[in-house]
Image (tube, rainbow, N blue to C red; front, top):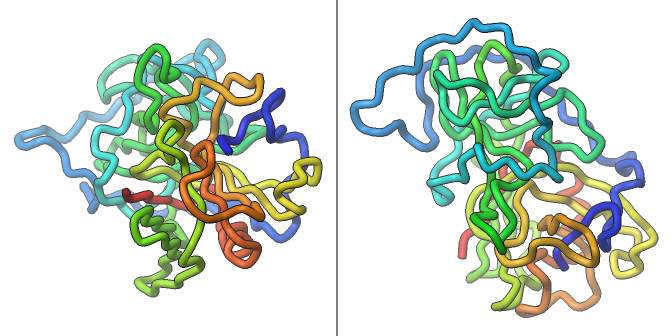
Length: 282
């Protein structure tokens, strides 16, 4: 399954399950480049930008957004910094590159999540983050994991509480906390050759329960920030979001890109806050 919204197979109209904690974001000091995707050789530290922008004039970057101005992750197999960012005000301007005009805004709250995002490059004044939405649908461009730059002054930065690692070859799902690895699943179903599970780094966008989807049997759906590499939309929706979800049939390459898991594994993943980094390896 490639999870859809609104008219799609998974309408995000239900509130998140009570057992799923909201993302807790506290201010942490921003230092020079941490681990994560390193800057280009010889690259200079981006200059501070103290401009006050008209945020209301900027389009929102959310799960439905198609923002051709924003770059796709050019290092999907790269490291993560172990940090997440969240707008400190009503919204944070989003830039394609430091030193340019903003092209979008990331609100502090969104109906379908995606406002707490992993940091993949960290400078003193700027952070490159993973974002919801797409640069383009697959029929007209690159639908890979969207990224953008935010100013450090516009966000609160905190350590990620955990990281999820998925290995499509080994069929394993691990949750890593403080260097300790927990194996939450050693078997699952994944995408077909025509509708593959997207690989690379992404994040938990939101977690919800929708009992109208009988195949989930009331278990939570953990939506990710990345969408299908081959589907423009799904079941009438104009988005095709990848997710972890329950299904009775959860062996082999049978889904539209989602990872089908058992109940116990879903329960563990549903405990993770929004913004938790996820890496999927082939």
